[in-house]
Image (cartoon, rainbow, N blue to C red; front, side, top):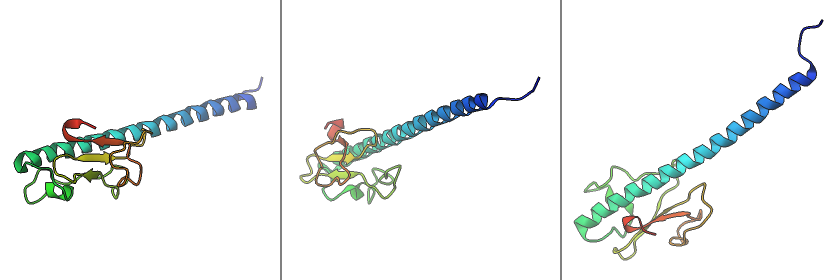
Length: 134
């Protein structure tokens, strides 16, 4: 009697390994997208809290951008950047100083938020306003 594996047995095992590996890779990339989206939402919540502190001290939201949150009085150590590409920024709009909109693009969401369509070149899919509204 010969010892060893037949070609069919080897092909079945290799096929099973390839299918399991591809399923693991797909699942891993989905988890990566979800974790980056969670980081983006947490960043916007952190920026929102800093904006509320700024408003409580100045009776208005900053109208020129988020850089007013970092100096000369510090409400946040640094303005966070996108976890996937640090050159991407979080969009901010407050033309009147009485309201604001923070926005970003989430990887796992397809709907577009309409608040900052002129600024969001990447079609913002998540917007946040005062006290978590919008």
